[in-house]
Length: 425
Image (cartoon, rainbow, N blue to C red; front, side, top):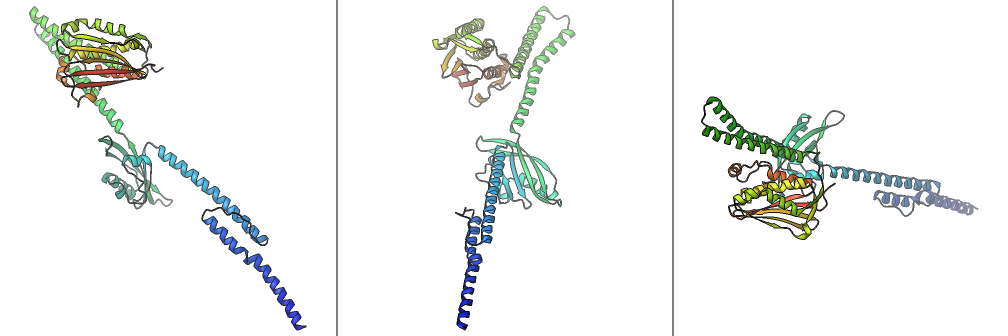
């Protein structure tokens, strides 16, 4: 009897132990495996845990946790992608450093400005970017907790030129008003500097060009006032000089007005069909006297396929007039000028070539700038305003085209106007 009771108790204990093991102990390896997979970012094949209701609830909770984790990761990835897109689209350079002046963030524009191959995140700023002025600006911002501004000059190895950058550093502060880092913005102001320099040069050049003829006119007017009994011969000489310089002033004013109209946002083209043979013939007829005076031979090279083009005839004639003016001025007596019109792909190319004194290589890239003269003394002596080629360039650009120059000292110069077959608008 005793053994029977003991056997029953052992059986009951075994069943109870098995039940408890299946309900509480057996599920734990599965739970541990699920947690490990979720921690590694892996998706478990199943969230069903063997056992009673409690393990099932644990499995369901882990599935919800995993789903929430995936959702959060997608949101973080989306925000990170959006942040990177914004940083990549910024035209200004962006740098963020912590309180120890270690780099925590930089955008592609900053890397490009400072010619960094890879983001130097986590390293001291002085090591990432070796620029004393920038390092000092950031250090002062971190120390004082106040916004700072400065200007940097950076060497551009691609263009072998210097770039100017405006820098603004703003401190980052926590709730206790402690400085925890600095945000630095880098705005490239190279073009603004260049435009400002062009403006100053333009004002200086206009002043210089106006001063000489005005001084001469004023001087001779004072002579006429002081010496009313001036002889007829001397009076004729003085009036001749005054007329020449007044015409120079008129040419300068006319060119300035023409250039202002071309650069205006309201500049428009009156497009029509232009016959090239008529355009060249009219040009030669207008310049016949000066061409004959220097015994210059004009050759017209106009293939049949370039007989017409669509353009503003009046402005195109003005551009060719300026080019022919230069060709006549700088050609030697008994020289030769070639007027040519050709088609090149979808463009029409008009060129004026001479065999005159030519232009040196160092001056060639700048000849289309306003008031730029390769030979200042000779140009003024020949009566040029220094605006002719600038006008030609703007007329070409207004047509959606461009200008090109080719020259060699002592071998002559060729200026080309490249126009699209179909002008804008």
